[in-house]
Length: 196
Image 1: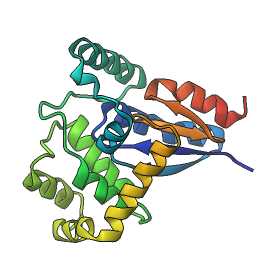
Image 2: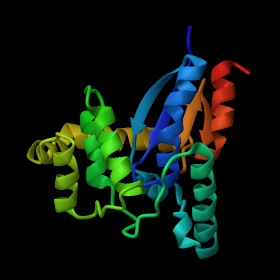
Image 3: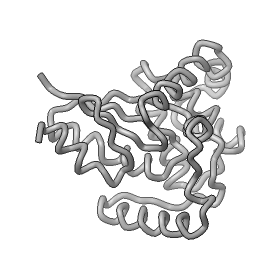
Image 4: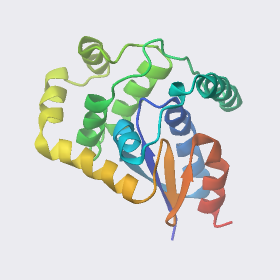
């Protein structure tokens, strides 16, 4: 029986973006399945008392250099969005709304690339509508979905579950109940999926 990895993520995290570029390959190589767990990073920070790295200037500057190193290692583009941080509440509600649909990965691709490759200002609803429309999503349908109380509750519940399981930031992964934090722990995730 193949293993699975739970991937708790928020599109506003550059580290989650890097993990998103690598996790499908790791899953394919290990025969694992990915359980996508969109959550709200701001909610996790609030519940755990954690702070964004940018709130500590030296840490924020180092983190961006370090993430650039990993992007080069992975061979993927990464540009630091001048509009960062992005308020992702609406975007992550969208992820919760599309989570069980065939176009979920199209949605994630559109958002991750808009923020971390194209440097778009997804704090601006008009830009969000433009990005979604260009990917074939109906912006009006998106607005209806993210206003749905069941969608709001789904995102809230996943965020609360993450906190209750010890998650304090993004990306976070679980394999066999074991928590791994950070895209720089993907080697350990791969080992766990191989049963090492």
